[in-house]
Image (cartoon, rainbow, N blue to C red):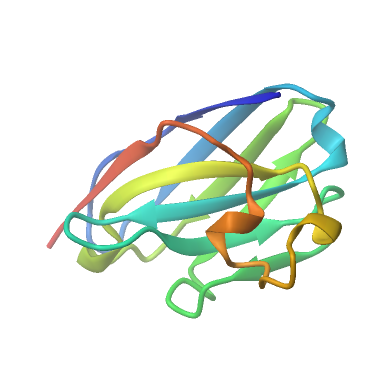
Length: 130
C-alpha cells in the first residue's frame, strides 16, 4: 500500500509559478514510478508528467512540456511538480499517483495512461487568474 498526500496548490496569476509536492508513505519510495495528473471542471483527468523510480527519466504532456518539471527526492519520499509560466488553462485539481507495478503491469498501455498508476492522492487545487 502507498499513501499519497499532495500540497502546494493555490491561486496564482497567469505567468506565475507554483511548486506542488506529494509526500508518499508505505512502500519504499525509491522503488516505483510517480506521476502527476490533473482534472479541470467538466473534463476528464489528463496526464501531466511522469518520473521513473530513480528520477533519471521524465515524461511530459505536450501541453506542459518546457514549462513544468517533475522531480523526486527519494530521501524525503517526495515528488514535486514545478509549474512555470502558468496559463488559465492549467487551472485544475492536480493529483499525484504511484505506479508500483512497473511496465510489467501496464498490460500494453502507454505510460501516460492513468490505468498504469495504482495509487492516488486526493488532489490539490490550482487556480490561475488571467
